[in-house]
Length: 92
Image (cartoon, rainbow, N blue to C red):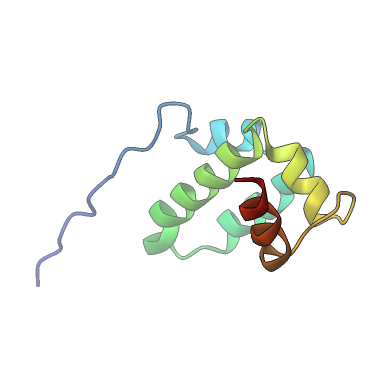
């Protein structure tokens, strides 16, 4: 039996790469979920898990993250695409 190495695809340079960097980059309310995911992960899944949470941490630290969170929480209006497109085509 042989094992194929997992190809590491580097992401943007501002993406946290270590467990500690990810933990620091995550909002406080997500740190416990991250720790639980680490605690319950199968060792074979750790690389992918860390990569996933690195993306979550990067997105959470993005300048638009607060707006996205407000939309998800229902604090900002959301419009259906079918309502927006006709309005935009009338502007052209």
